[in-house]
Length: 356
Image 1 (cartoon, rainbow, N blue to C red):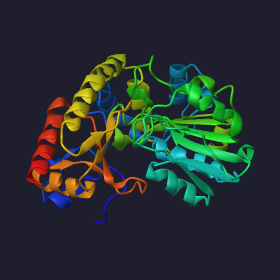
Image 2 (image 1 turned 90 degrees about the horizontal axis):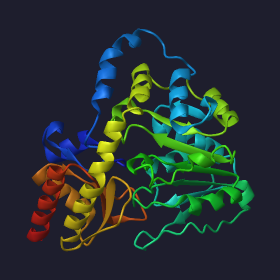
Image 3 (image 1 turned 120 degrees about the vertical axis):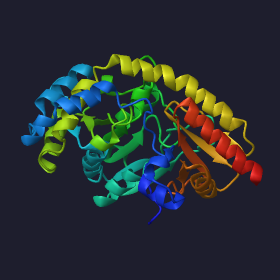
């Protein structure tokens, strides 16, 4: 089986480790280990009867719920089959620009989506070992005819740009797409979302995910926030009923679960700090500060070898960074999991490093 380019491929991991999927502890996909929230599972059970009918093709009820959550009119919101689907339509629009600036290293699906529409891509490489990541983008074409694609917090580094840092770019580029898939992991007072600016800048597109924070990646649910005219165009492009009935009703339920949200915020900061300190104490590993629920780690040992040894000996799956060509074998990424799981990872790494 070919080496995966995304995290969370437990079929591949179990094959490499020679064990059942259920034996693998997955640090490669950055999913909230505290979920799914009980309200999500209750809603699925109660909603099974909806499977006998087609969803509302316009998802009016879901759009209204998401819009109310973000204090926007419903026509500014479009649910999708995961953030990946919405990034596909955003990439179709970016491909219509003379140039698309892509902040790298970048989530591999950005390359897939942009290349699918033959976009002209100009990478802007971040210096991931620096203290701060500059967005001073130099482009080879007119910025007024160029697009920009970035995520905030940045994946795979976890770096968070301030709203004030990104806002000037909205004045420069014809189209700016910001993937905020991990923004929910920050408490509201720390978030740097551009949603408050969306009605001011018709050239801004924001993509959000509900599956990472609420631990529901199998349901496939995300949404885009953008000018209604743009979203109407996307609706005409895509297949009907992109969001299944269960995903739609679960989304309405989980965004109201303030208790689960607060529990996650209370868990993440001290647990991430503890994992950061534990990794820092291991010889040859240098984790990078992160605002998200994952850590990027500089390693003196080939990350693919660490991954293989952790899998076969300890049944732990980390994310090597081979698919991030700018990082290669010098880095790996780990999700922040429970304290117990994190300690298993630290112990496994300590053993492998001690063995040499």
